[in-house]
Image (cartoon, rainbow, N blue to C red; front, side):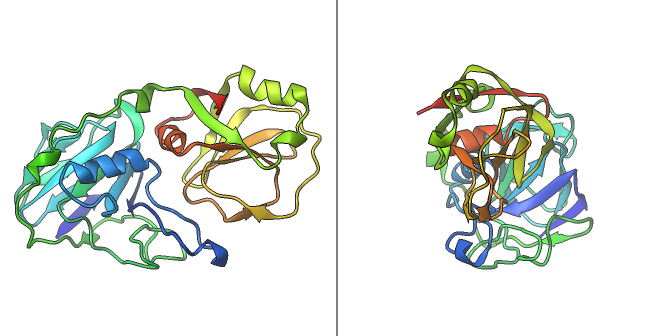
Length: 281
């Protein structure tokens, strides 16, 4: 078992998402940065869909009450094992009584901690991903106990040499496809989408990232239609909203662009004030 001594800013259990229930209004959820979450799992020899702890900006403090192995990928939040710094993207053995904690945010925004076999918390609709109203708990809380499989032994050494793409964190260009309402934009509006940078506003979370700059908008609202993570909506005020993993399943704003999956993952590592550009594919 793993005891949560401190929670950090916003720490949740996430796997790769809750698929097949969107017709009932259930969000996909899942790791904001699927690339990093999968990396943390694969380096341990886990299935990529095993449940991890998603850590946002500041990390939790965790007490391990059993022997297991962990791996931390994604943002660099200065992870430590018993106050000694540990490396990212490297399987680490932990013993009963060991404390894993985090310090200063060095780069990125979200980090992922995997354990051998994955976390075995509440599973709802074929997913461990926490979401308010779907799972009993929406995030980790102090003194919470996380169940893990202590019967597993050893690591799959064949995964130890996987190389992490640094561009995943440094790239400012977001690859996009045309959204269903893209062609309703004027030529000027279309050109502006790809000729200017956009800044991530303070309004960013697991549901959506809003951008600071405005785009002139004279489009009519659409009939409520399907949306999904990566859908970029143009609001009546001219603001662009990029839907993320916990987004609603339908929306009434024009869907002007759609982020490529790899760009959703990269965007999840951006913070308030970061600048991005769109590149049409």
